[in-house]
Length: 251
Length: 235
Image (cartoon, chains in turn red, cyan):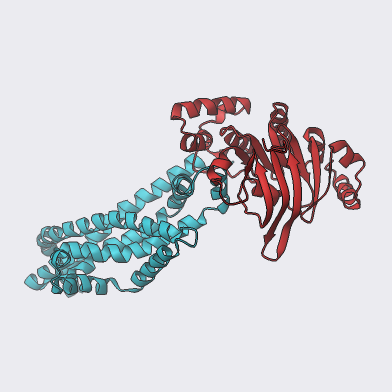
């Protein structure tokens, strides 16, 4: 926990890719056990923001503090940092040459020094929790998209992270597979997991989010409790965005 | 026609040529097995060095690139001459006192490592960056990511082209004859000089072909087996 009481604090974070400014002086704080949902159009900077939090991207200006540690001054060990931050990607990114079991046990064995037996026991618990224990010895390509994404979540959880970053984890899934993944996230939220979620599903953001941030062109244009953002947004851009979402039938 | 058959396919010639050429062919087998193992190892090393990130690794990367550029462009026969004749003539102690067989291994390894480095590198680059990202985001180090995530996928993908280069290497062991290593081609030559028959060359050709066929079938099976295990079934 940092001095200001927040678990994650971003202050003036700016990120550029060549000429393009993807994030512009972002200020954001996340408390322990809080679920923060980032909403906004594609290209608004949601994914980049998540990647900056676990140092997959370096920032050009500003500071990020995670769990009392400033991660943006180049002095931290990124590997140690990442071991306490789980990230789940839109495209699952499971390791195709490894079974489900191997996918989940790799990082705990190599980075936390767990024995093979310990790692497997832990993995079996996680697989039971996500309802895929019978798939332990399958290769990812033999699973449905929803199952693969649940395995990817289990793989991240196997590191016992203090913070989870979810990067549009349902947008590559068929509609009928979305709910199985969202149920799992809902359960995680109920157990008090701190999460930052780049969300595609507005209904879900409304339901599990303690705070919703609307990103537009690299700026957090508006943030507040979900009731306020979804029912009485202050900014015109937020209203337009939500209106388009409703039109597309995604709320 | 009769003359041709007599020269290349003389039945009596076969019977006498087979043991003699086989004698030399064992040297080819030794050359290829040793060189292939060395190539597998060194090429992987050079490919890894070529992929090292960061400005600090630039001199190493440049060295690796210089090496592959040079030896991919140099004819094997020339490299063999340099090692087989040039290096001993230097009288430079240890390096000049190796056997012709060892110079042959060195020449084959130098040239084929350059080819196979490129094959490995293509494989490494074919692994999608999101795989590295996923591994690094789990807290695995660069080396752990390479070892457990990138290389296993890369190497699987390059097995067929790797095999192709090894068949090339197997055939090119015959070039080592130019520095005086008595292998199959040399024996076939001796035979034809002794009997004025070219059947020895036919025998040598058959030996080379017989060696590559099981190798190719084995690789096919390996690939199919893996497909069956890891890929989704077509319905």
